[in-house]
Image (tube, rainbow, N blue to C red; front, side, top):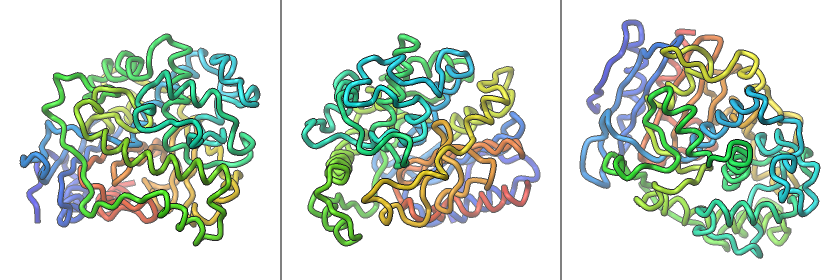
Length: 395
């Protein structure tokens, strides 16, 4: 059994035990932090950073993958609360160029709830990894696109484009990139070690993510997979999805470099630790040292599901499986593969097993980060199960 470091308040010992059990076979390192009613009650870590050959300790930060999308959602919901962004308004009200390609009626909430029909980049757009890291070129490319399905009629995770779509809205409304807005309005007031665009002074703290059994899928692999599911990989939707899946492997690799850390890719290259994720979520549901990010009304609106009645678009019905993602205004909601703490929870997972969420009814807010990419996005990560079970016992 690995040594577990850090602190646990009385009554939360089983959370530590569950964390220890889940980490026993983890080849990397991990941190878990839990707040309850605005106070930190669990702050623990374990393991190694095998890439750099050093402990994964309390000062370690790592790429958060799609947990970053929740940080972007926090910014958008704060702007909604302040009356600067209307979720029911056309996106083109704030971003006029977005109206091209028949998108004049696409609504802000549809971007936040992954139902805008813009889940990837057409192969003909020639958007590759380099362009995805260029906020101007990627925003221009997505503004020119025609939707892949009628917006608002289906939902499919905008895994690569969400950060561009919502990040550009934030920039149009505030005049700041989403990374700078998050730094000023969220990270600084809460004193978070969480950045979208890492300062060079923090680079020495980063633990690289890694796949214990790496295997990148080629375009032909993806085509064979969809064909095996009875879908036609030559349709525009699936050609776009396959192109974006292949490019994303390059993006994830680039996200492991200092150059990738310093740029803003608000769909997935936020860098931080479990403490900061938990503290951010705690401030979404209550007061944390005098800081509260959401009013109760904003919180309720943010976690109201907008996609349960929406099917997957044609071609993805079988691929999406039995545990489809569920979305509120930018946040994921509980599903079989991401149970969180059950109904009422809202948060976001990140590729490989990162996780952050809040459960307002209990006052819990949780951050879990790791370096080994083990989660399959189909079943709950084994590393989550012991400590989530212990927290459920405390509800």
